[in-house]
Length: 255
Image (tube, rainbow, N blue to C red; front, side, top):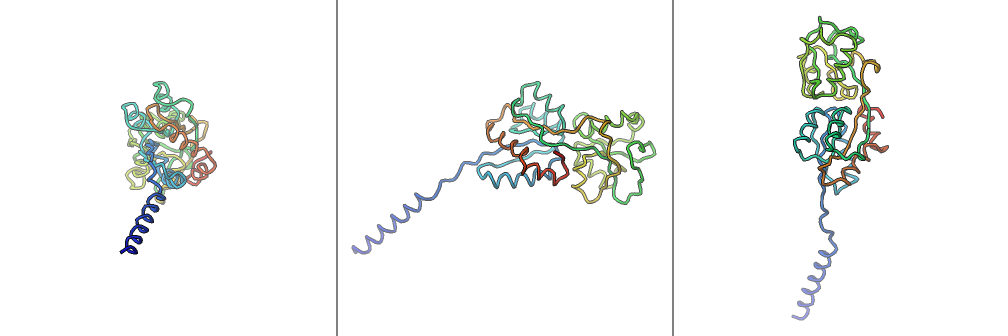
């Protein structure tokens, strides 16, 4: 009996020791990131790398046109970090004190290109070739999609905007532009250079001259409403780090 009691006591102490040495579950901080649609593929990999190095952080992304995302933030959406495809929409939030000014950082650049479906027998090699003989044209809505606004700048500079208005099919973001061209629903579309790597069905017909439009620079910032400012700011720092920049470069973005 005594032996049985001692054995039971030993096992109880052993179990208690094991429980004591088992670390308690770490609290996970969820960071909500609203990001331009053109960043979606790159952010999938960045999420994996960042969460692997920061097991106490979970990144949740919402992708879309930068204007739409900014409007959601204005309406009170739960967002910690905003990644915009242009400066204008970040400026809108800055003017309304909806971002933390000293967290704003330009983290990557891009270029505007004209795309067509592969093997579509369209021999245009410059934006200057575009004319009304083309079928429909996919373009992000310039009012909310930066890529559409950049395209409008180019076509206005070339005195082609008004002549092509009836050809436009407006898209909610660059992902939808890609879809329209991939399916053959439109003859051409305007997207970022990085977007072409997201599709095996399209090809670049021409790159817009950099002097025809505002430089494409993506800013990031922590929102003023974020309750996780330190973690959110750390994520932005990762985007500008060598590791973050290497991932973005793999997806066609420029430093």
